[in-house]
Length: 444
Image (cartoon, rainbow, N blue to C red; front, side, top):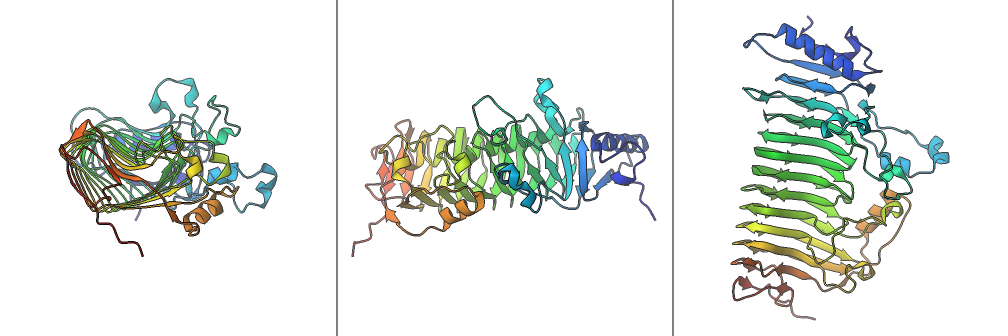
């Protein structure tokens, strides 16, 4: 028995899904709306994309609840590596493009001024109730190419700029799910405004200018168990004006200008993540973030080893801090920081790098954090994979170096700093902050 609420895009009579999947999906959504036109009896539908390449030349507009768009494979493979392999070697590559159930975003956002116009999927519906339970699962959204941004970059494929977005949600919504997806070569992977009970789980979002942006405001949502990494001028995870956000068990790759950046976020948790960054400012709590728990994360900072990207950075120097906090009553407990330093690469030259920086605010609790700071000579390689793995596994020349484990600026007071550095590693005014030093292990 067939189900009238299950649609296979390759069997739909309107349009050609391989030439313009946007036209096909919009036609299917119109059919759902016509058949489920009353205010009751709206089960929604599933739209299925079998594994194949589907060009998208028409933006998909989603304005119904209870819709799931799903494929059979997120299909991620590194476009960045391919575009930095000489073209005369492409014939020897096993594959050139991402695969699975793959949508090729053929929109041209350069002709418009609206940030949403470059989105493959645009979700918007006003009125009550809010649009709810829209799901994206197990397919790939591929922005195809980055473009020249006027920066002088020799290879335009390394700019992370093209004006394209994978999923753009403009309206307040409830209980959306984005799971098992692949996003590649998009300037913005996922941009969502005004989220409530959102789940972004088990996705592969990499080689995008920005990965996840939660904008406007939001509450009671989670970003969990994703593999992600943004470009040098973008966010891997960004959230503003959020309450009750859970960011946990993500593995975040380096090169993003910021791994996790929170602005005006309250009563939320950043826990059990593995973060790797090439630049300072890997975690930023800004604009009066308050009552946030940052705990049990592993944060690694080292230098870019891949030759095509070594001239890039995020504009911050080593005094900014790997974790920078401007806010009140946050708890920074039990994190491990690995700072692998090439002394020749420090900015400014000769600086003592800062690990945790309390830039502003009061009442923050910093306790039982461990910092391992070692010196190593930066390498360089033409293979992104081998250069990065070699850098991660390097164990030679591990000379311990001086760092400031906690810097408390004068604009931040009434904080408690416990067992997060020796007396020499902490810089603070002890007359307006509480302090207990980590005991020093006697030298042999």
